[in-house]
Amino acid sequence: MNTTTSVIPVSSVTAAATMPFTRLLHAYATECRYELLRTLRQPIFLFPMLALPVLLYLFFGIVLAGPQAGSNPQVALYVFSGFAMFSVVGPGMFGFGIGLAVERSSGLLTLKRALPMPAGANFAARMVASMAAVALVLAMLIPLAKYFGNVPLPAGKIMSFAAVGILGVLPFCAIGLLVGSYVSGTAAPGVVNLIYFPMIYLSGLFPFPIPESLKTAAVIWPAYHLNQLALHALGLPTRLGVGICAGVLLAVTAVCLFFSIRRLARVG
Amino acid sequence: MAIENAAEPLCAQLEGVSRRFGKTVALQDVSIDIRRGELLAILGPNGAGKSTSIALLLGLHQPDCGRATLFGRPPGEIDSRRRVGIMMQEANLPPDIRVRELIHLVSSYYPDPLPVRDVLDLTQTGPLASRPYAALSGGQKRLAQFAAAICGRPQLLFLDEPTAGLDIQARERLWATLRTLVAHGTSIVLTTHYLEEAEALANRVVVLARGRMVATGTVNEIRALVARKKISCVTSLSADEIRAIAGVQSVHQDREQMCISVREAEPAVLELLMRDRSLRDLEIHRAGLAEAVAELTEGAAS
Image 1 (cartoon, helix red, strand yellow):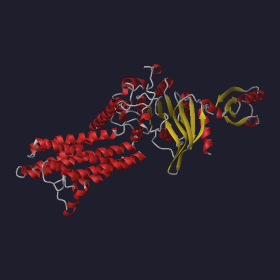
Image 2 (cartoon, rainbow over the protein chains, first blue to last red; image 1 turned 120 degrees about the vertical axis):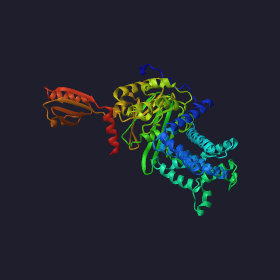
Image 3 (cartoon, rainbow over the protein chains, first blue to last red; image 1 turned 90 degrees about the horizontal axis):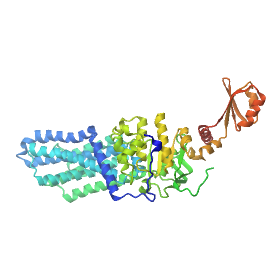
Image 4 (cartoon, helix red, strand yellow; image 1 turned 90 degrees about the vertical axis):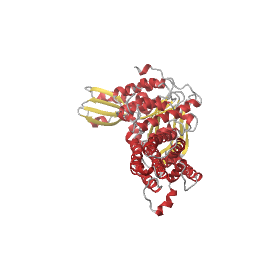
């Protein structure tokens, strides 16, 4: 086709180009759709986040602890909750943190700031993608626990437990965001790991022994508070109240958001 | 030297802006107007301040002093940005998104975008539509970026080196599309290293060097600033004899050709012909934009 003859009407909007509300919703939806698509198209990225918790739980929760689960259902629930919450932390921190840092380093974030992308669409899309990744891994872990691990999981508890997991990814998105807004794309995986590994171990998510001195310090890790909420959803006794744990996670989210937004507004 | 036309409304404007990054002065007292329906080329060597100028117009940076406006508003406001299309050379678009999806995604940011099909046709990216961005060649990436820039039906288009890496055919087609866009009222700001691109397309040119504005005007006005003509001929006169002719600025011999640089060609040619009746292969060239810009930016650097 001949471009010289094609008619390209300039936007007829001459006053301030306002966006109808439906177009705005459409923009958010489109951003989410492509973020999900991108996540699914990176199996290398998705695989460890989904497969690692499932494989670990299969080994520790079912093969090793499974036979005793019938006699001690509480322990089985504790083990299950720990591995499930371990699977929640990864998509948030890695998906959000590394993704954002790479976007920053590649200049894409600058372009997005210059484009009329609705404020927050990028974050919203990444949050949805992280929550979807968590939903996916929980959809594998829960049946595994219920049918192969003899873990007593009634439907009502599953719902509230899944809700804790899916919403619980958000504070870790915020931590990832904070890392991603400060370090480069190449440094981000290292820095995220530096926080991630101590946190999942010292929060007591795994049924591995933790030095007594560090046990009391578990409260400094957000993942500990998330697990407390998850245990509560499963109807197990918890060390801290629901209000305290939820409050800590909200505070972590707010502080991380505050510093990342401040940083991104300054340097992009 | 730029002829001000008060009736022409401005799309975007830098007024006496300065901006430094640490100790580096990126821009110093630069004023640029972008008028409706014109193509303005910003020229200059690397580090001249071209990208900083665009970043200020897009609200990505704030000027240290002076003022930047986009459609009469502070840049960075989303309503102004909805009237702007952008192609950035240094931005890597998402690698795992296909070209059609990319256009669809960027279109979703605008209130009244072109249909994706039309964008693909217009930018000759139809054959690339199903290919992931990462699998495209450098020139094809350029075209995909261009498609993303125009999909929102922008009134003002920022293009950073749009034809770098394109083959001649693709470049000609892109130029044709740009001319059509301008003819339909789109304003375009183009930064380019290819001076022939500015020569072929620009209504006006701004020349930057070391963060300062060295010159602004039409291509012809910029060219006239460096009012040099080049005469080449085969003559029996020696270089010294030619240097003695009034108005001759420099002479050098290239095999049998004598290359003479003068401010005004006609009196010099007359004099040459009077002194050497056997003179042949006479040619007179006007200095191109390339020579003009080189001279202007060198002048600023020294």
